[in-house]
Amino acid sequence: MGYRHLSIDEREVILKMCAQQASMQQIGDRLGRSKGTISRELSRNVSSTHDYKPHLAQRYYEKRRQASKAPYRLEGDAWLRGHMQKKLKQYWSCEQISGRLSKDYDMDISPVTIYSWIYRNRAEGGEFYKFLRQSHRRRRKRRGGEDRRGQMPERRMIDQRPKVVNERRRIGDWEGDTVEGSKGSGFIATHVERKTRYTVAVKVADKSADTVTKATIAAMKNLPPEKVRTMTFDNGKEFAGFKELERGLDMRSYFARPYHSWERGTNENTNGLLRQFFPKGMDFGTIIQLDVDIALELLNNRPRKCLNYRTPTEVFWCKPMRCASD
Image (cartoon, rainbow, N blue to C red; front, top):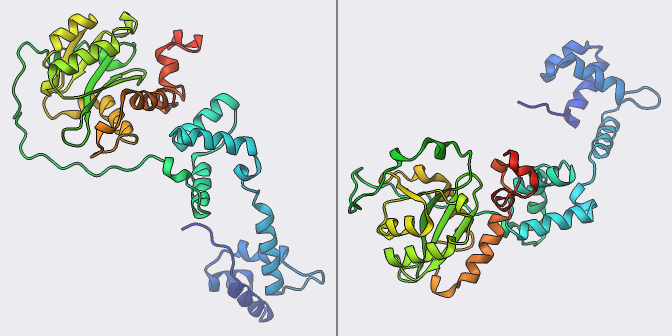
């Protein structure tokens, strides 16, 4: 249990026991306090005539307590408050804002301080809390462990993937998946680079292998060839065109084991981040590629703790020059 300050009732007890000439140890035992606490109370909270008066002692305590509280920093610093609000509107988390302030401006503002400001702002009718990442419903467990989906001939399984991919020490190893809108409204094909978390995504009208393959090649063909080495998919039929993808992007593809989503954890996490902009059940017929591009701009320029608070764009495109040593 943490330390509790003396209450006015306890101070009344101290006065009565002092009048009875009780020792500090006896007073402490009665109140469940140390004799040091009683000693400090009697030495610092006496009147100008050196008398101990409970209500005066309480006022002294409250005055010191108030003086010890510095004004809220975010209320007193207009630039800092404006910077924080700007980043919240870009859907940065409190931890990302804090980490980047330390990195760019050598300013020590804890995530808790930012959260506290958001909650105070909400209590006053503000809406910055709406930019915080929302929690997701727990997924339903699938019954049975067998793979009920059809097999794709000649696919390489993740066990055949080079070990260097697991180490995340190079740029160029990707994970692919799709995000689904409301039934029949379309999909977003997502591709995430494992080391940098840089994301490429494209809206597709349907989940056919031909549609997803062509859209993926178009979206990634202009990336530097050395930054597209491998791609790991789940076992959905939309990736049945992996051979054409390999030819179109000059890379090798691999497949996670069925129902082992954690083997593509980077992509799964990124899809969760995209859901902040395109929630489950949303009609994807109401969005265009520009909407996806805006979300990607926000995600790829949001600092990540795993990147030492650099952004995916900075690391993927080697900005600043220091990235050569990564």
